Image (tube, rainbow, N blue to C red; front, side):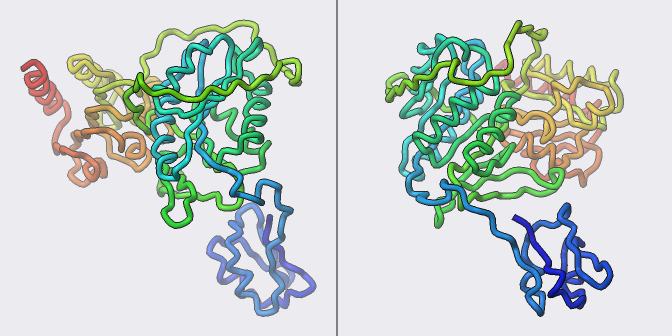
Length: 399
């Protein structure tokens, strides 16, 4: 779909150019020309044109634009690696349960792998009403073609209204490919989901324009409504061992699929502590000053029994490894206590810590944005305040 200017009708009045909020129209030899690279297709110029020389071309609708009522339910891709279901799957089941209940529909999960029947009960415990199980030789390791084939087949056959996928390395490869195959939209890296009370559409909120604003995106004309969600955004529910569900075995063979890749060997990286699982995080930013000074952050985290983190500024400066970066371009975390030391609080960082139970901020600048979202703010020198804070927290912890 694109906005088109009919050259033969254009009279060169330049009204469209003057009113374009994105400077996407220029006059070339007295004829208006649209820069489709910057045009947002807002359509404002269409109504402004006095001679109706501008229109928006229509694309042929896909079959999933019709009979939207055929689609129902919330479906979660249950990611597993080497037979272990990842935490993001349980987090999505928790949020999916809320969405399904608001719609009055069922919550299902797709589990793909080899010899993973024993993991189905875990998905029921965390809220799934139904599990679609694809199990067989060739599905043990994630590969694009087999997993896309399985997901596409299940979505086309069972027609979920909403599909949720974790924004992991696997999910970021799988999500857009599935959306392309079933011809629907995909909102990537969501940090909040909801259901519109009037339209019952999925509200998909994510950072936009470099994290400077939060955009809520809708998919009104296509199904399913698809979103990838960053790990750590939602908290998983407590498992309910009494919860049971329906198992649907989906039979398919790897021989039916054109697989162009083969996993020869899996090499595990050295153990890296995942800050997304931490209950206490002490993070440092530009205000820490240097890599050597970062030891105060690491020591404080260790004393509190937590994990250290960092803002993007600290990572970009080379003071800390990117595995410990918190924020929109790092990891989204939701600890019980988050202590931000020398972090200004750019919106990208705020997006990564907003789900924390308690945020404590230490900063010399009384106008630092981090204080806007902090539960407790301390204006002063972090090198003096942090040791005292750790000492007092340990006193409470040990009583």
